[in-house]
Image (cartoon, rainbow, N blue to C red):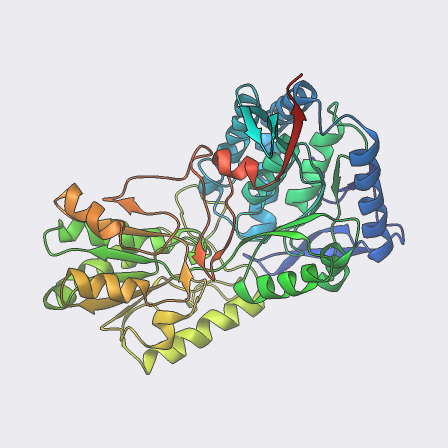
Length: 485
């Protein structure tokens, strides 16, 4: 698969930008240009929207469940065949460690795509209510779930392939037509998907994929009258902009936004294993995950012991060259993010105790690498404890008792994820039920699965991805009645 010969997908055709323009793709591990991608302009986006509108209005895609099942299965099979070709492309554009492409970056998402055709085999799009006397006449009422329409899917750069598949999987399964716009930094996770989709029975215009270096071009998707729904993953600040733009035409909006999740380690937990598990997870993919529990809450009297354990874990973490299969952490995505994280670290030095890391390592004169970083004795109201850093920065925060831990965890504008560690599952569950967040893991249990709905409370977003709820997020509800004859 040639990374210098990538195409968009518009109305069933693999195409370049109408202007012929391309833009450079930079490898964040080397800061070198490693290829190009089509640089769509507003006219290209307009063509994609028009194609999606025609396909939704004039084909049987939205009503033909068996066609959708077949096409999604074909897409999954095509991606399986080229997974090993996609893997180095994903690492080159995103800096994701190649080792992570197996469970989360590529193979896992491809296998998860099979959830949707399986769900479609049992999901009831229509149910009939019993006859009932209503206003003097007996009626039968039918409640029907129908595709929401044309969906604009806008994805970020941190787990680009996984997020692309998550969004188009749910939307296509529901019967919607889609325009996918990948992040400018990671266009190839869209173009390789375009190539795989072009070789299926997906009707022309049902799935369109456009790449652009200019997010202002992408704003067309959030304002256009022919787009019925927007599904967006990214920062909370950009999510607010998407909502404002969508409000003019009252579009449906699904948002998966920022997080500042808390891992609560109770006083009866195995401190060594709990801290090791929680602290190490924060640095996966250089901390560039919205659901990572970057706040580690520990009892005050265990703070120094927890800091020593976390320091040992972070100091021994395998990281560096993302093509090295032994590494679980590579670079940050670009210079802007690199500078943002280093700035937060400087802020943190004035707010808490820097235990380890906090610098760009000397061995990397190129690449956006930041060493795994730990702050201890972090005040719960400090900036590094409240703002999303999106880098390999762990904050150890002390608490007095269970009630105090819950208070600190909930004292956030975010509510995406979290975890609780305790020797008692029942105690952990009692704490979890009090947390205002979308997903909770007890004692390291995993929830990242297509059957499990994912999404946040508060300013972490609206709606859910995956699960039955992820399908219904792309469905409208219609009720119609008729008299009993």
